[in-house]
Image (cartoon, rainbow, N blue to C red; front, top):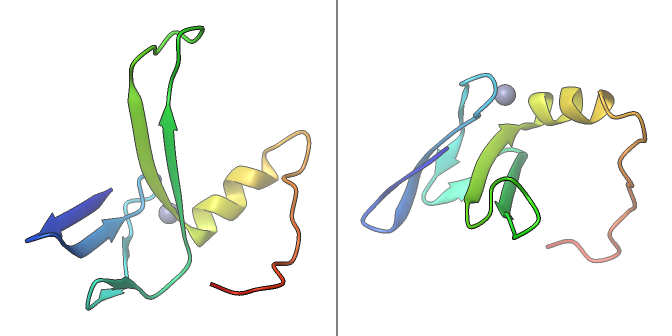
Amino acid sequence: MRKYENDKLIKIICNKCGRKMSVDMDIVKEGVCTVEKDWGYFSGKDGEHHQFDLCEECYDAWIKSFVIPAEIRENTELI
Ligand SMILES: [Zn+2]
């Protein structure tokens, strides 16, 4: 969950555990997984936009629950 004030990011809270993540001067200072999904016609959520943020620990716990592991590769260029 993100909070903005005057178009500046002031707060990110992990949607799963509720922990406030570190934000300084509009920049997130730790790993965060942001998921945004526009559900389409063949779903039961047609027309809905979902968005949530997870801290790195909750992300790790989430992907460990997958039957098929997430695909992970090294980026050759860092953002
Ligand atoms: Zn969390």
